[in-house]
Length: 168
Image (cartoon, rainbow, N blue to C red):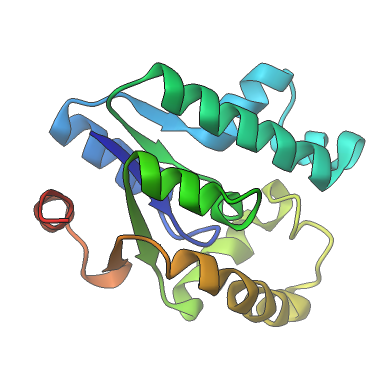
């Protein structure tokens, strides 16, 4: 069983990934963390030194490598992962995709606190952040909506997530 957790930055993919992997006794892969380890630098530094295009190529390579070398896992994908190189199709063809749909107000509050750690947000003023989030979310939504399972993060529990995943 391969479970890909999708959603906008700040939607809780890593949090839910940890809970799911423990409950299901599956390996957890955090895609951004894995890329940072392979590149030997944090994600925001990869963006700064090599650019987003380079990062997206690495993201695709690591996504494919983990998938091809592991039969079962939970993967916390980056917020943009499904939006590039037909990654959404690849994930749908190789496992179960779960979109953690989180309300914009919740995303804004979470990301306001984490802004300096996020390469796409770190240079935005607080008042620019909400406009950016709305714009970027509307661009990415078309990809998130292609997930096999949509979960409203407000109402999620690890038990309900597992139950929904098993019925896909």
